[in-house]
Length: 410
Image 1 (cartoon, helix red, strand yellow):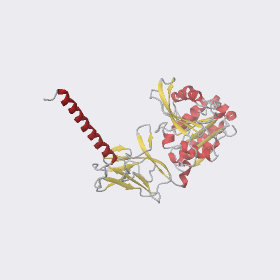
Image 2: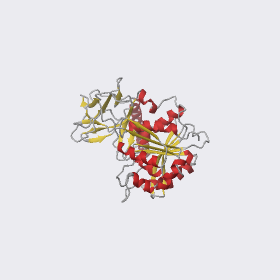
Image 3: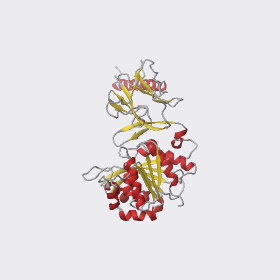
Image 4: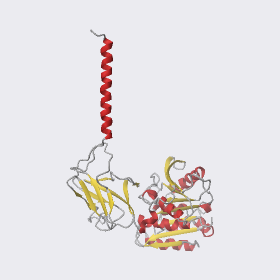
């Protein structure tokens, strides 16, 4: 009879050997990636090889094919709020919404747009049995006020101004969190610093760039491509290197505060965010080196917190927003009465007021009273009227036209 220790040691050694064999087998399995099953579009766990399909494919004629693997789904649609002429939005009620997709034998759904898509950046999603989902294979996404969408870019000459190019020096986009004393909460902003900022000791002018009511502080970069637009302009010598701060245009809801007339946003911007940026970034903190611009709701914020503060901003841009007679919160007469003293200073102190609007924009009727008010106060302004409506296609191009005008002579 062998001593107990003999059996114990042998048993432990045997267990260790078995574990070693198992580990070796697992390692070998990892070295040999799982193979694709040609009968289904579903990829096996731990599969790291090339995908059997691309979810977004631009065709030579600029039509775009979309694909989604969903073998169990009963119906899938492609949706987008950005290209209603290609992918219908369902407005007015009763009209089609999205493009229906077709499933093949492997469970892969696909659809190709019925006509070419203009070179630009767009948001999209899939609707699977009535439930919205982003692209599972996607790598670019856009946060909005409510929810998130995937994005895709159709490349082409007309959209080249916003396309990332390897030969162009690139700046950096950071997500900034700061404490708002005015609101008593943590706030978020996105900050673009231009190429070279990390290496040099230069102080830069700053543009505060605000999004619209349906978007977030992420939107000007994720779908607006503000950073690549600035990279390309700076590389071409068309715009001065600048810091771009993209604030959160929304504040917590409370009685008496409206989306377009929001003193809480202004208190946070002027009292907290600007001082924070000047304290933590190399900024030229003079009013002559500070600009504010915004689209839609952001344009309203700019009218109320930029144009009315010449001691803080000397460069102003308003995209797709205006003052409407007869509107209690957005009327030209109400606005003039409230900000009369500041508007009288603007004519002498501002370096630029830039105003842009699409002819098909539902807010186009606000142009006349807004320009009339500027003329009444002797505020010179550049007006850019384009085709199109209330859409990102216009807003990217307004930024590309506005940015080269900033900080000239500074």
